[in-house]
Image (cartoon, rainbow, N blue to C red; front, side):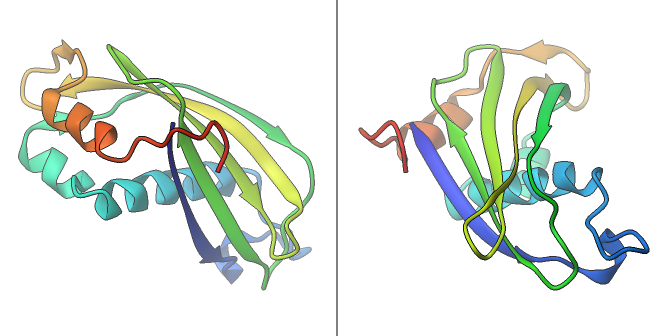
Length: 140
């Protein structure tokens, strides 16, 4: 399993008038964690773009459990349990500063050549990045 987590603040503009995080922002939190993981593991989103590699979203499934509020600190996790072939499945969770699970979900991404729009198998460079950060543990 490849695992990463990051901490983000809840910002004013992410909240509705009641001070609760709007449901659409959880997808952004997921994206922030995936992007930070790639940066930390040595193959940033910008480097992928330079290599003409993009990651179209094929599907997102979310389950909401507990609201986040303005001023909360958010811990967002990303876990990849199997090496990708033609699609990348990332299991993600969002916790508040008290460790309460607020949202969980799975994001399915494809691999695509940015110039041609051609669907690709997992590129070797991306696969190597994941292999370098595999853990023997099933859980963080």
